[in-house]
Length: 461
Image (cartoon, rainbow, N blue to C red):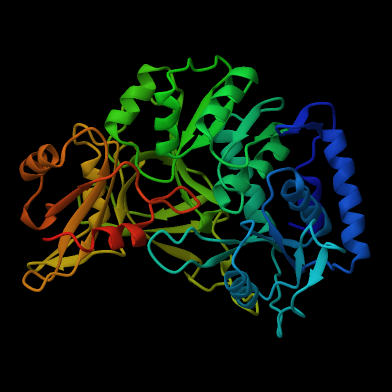
């Protein structure tokens, strides 16, 4: 795909809503005109096609303008959170060789950061579109390189799966420096739908917006869904898709939402695939543990049928990243013959749906038996009175390791311990349970396993 094709593909001109904020509404004609002005400014300031621009997330329209301006220009975007610590910012610049930083708060706006890669890689098939940090849920964050072709293919396939159409309105309350929030603007532009921007998740503000505006789609992590359910407001008739991802959806929370009329769809994805890997149809009942729906057609899966020993999911196809970021932007880092080996254990059901069993990179040996904390956490979601759960492994001088769990819900620690004794074999049973009001989370909304491990590290085994 050429840069010209990528730039032209997303646009729908006309009076339909393109972006809605708390203070203004832009249609596609106004957005397209503003993007043209931004492209001219970037060119005048010295940006060249193929270069990489660091852009801080803002509460309004500026990041969306940069998304589309850079796409039209043929340059690439590196989104970062607003107020990113200087050492973290410099680390990303060193990792990616980002040539420029854009900030509407600084005179001139475009600041030269580096001369670019010392030996720039050649991108013969599709130019670079995005470099975006992973959420880093259980280790050191990396940055992922996505091409124009993969970004556009992901948007097209997700739109088809979720029936996103011209005139629809997608409420975005996820962080837009992560792929889950950023991808919404590409999808909506491709479909001719509108984006309703909320700079952060505030349950009252989101609920009010859903009552006042014809929201058709919303993306949430389970704790957000729980907060909205607690408000006990009616589900608006316009809402067709409540997309739930980021972590497993517990049986109790799913039952509450379905009983209240929420049109739930489950999704599983990652930055390395431009967001989604598999997405379900509308749920009619609580999902089977870990089952998230059928894979998108742009992916080949190396994945066993459920029932055998767990194995890491491998992916290949047009949605998969060009590689992890590196100073020379060489493609292929983190891939083997085009295959991405994920940290997640998964299998395919007889119906062809993907079942995610949890992370495999935290596996530990307890009493000579290999145990997967992520798989145990997934099973804990079936316990009565448990809405969210996270399980980590700690060292043990006698057994080599032990599992400890943090959870959110109405069950007492004693009640959950009794349930665990009947459900888990010895090595898999969490030896300590900690009830929390909320699980520590990353900016992406995923559980912060490193912080949870710190919290539970002092718990006696």
